[in-house]
Length: 289
Image (cartoon, one colour):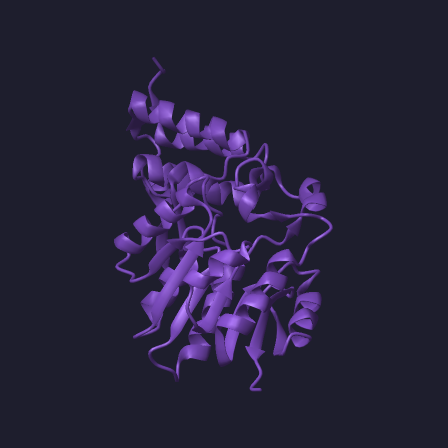
């Protein structure tokens, strides 16, 4: 049994505990998200009614969540939710947490598709389904296929598509296995946010990434940082319609290498700088023969 506690007092306890591992601004944002998710009380609600008493169950849940945060579990995995391009997605440790950079990739695809209709689109390594679901909601008449090797990720993506009324055809495919490509068709647009972090950079990342998010979706062998892009370039030569486009998220230090790879494989490639000033997106257009 816990002693009775007010919303204001427990919020301060949670915030102080989060500040042990996050800076003050991020800690405040996480504390507000967690508190509202577990209690239904917003930050403004705490300010208005700091003396509101909380139930024993709520106190226990919040303290357990704080313990998870201090073990570097991301807030999105604790709440089971993440926002992406205005959509609330379900997430779990089976999928990467969608990033703002990927929203920029989606926006680029939507802008490119504005004057086209009946597009056939493929998303490679779909994870939570964030890319194809957002595209389905914003591109009228597109037929969208999304593939992943991770069955648990596909289950999450399918749930997201259903809850958000998105029409996407999901399929389990090991994209690195070229013998699996025969089951895929031809496409006007290919999108991908593939694994691109060399394994030797693992120690440079935050613990809430390396200890919680799926390594299969993050890392590639240190000696093969462009592994997935090489496969995508080859796949596109066989499955991308002429003048079709491939939109890819990349490691900020390898974007130009990715672009050069595609330039050498019968594509015209350009590097896009994201809102943080990083070279993060490569768009490759298949040249006419």
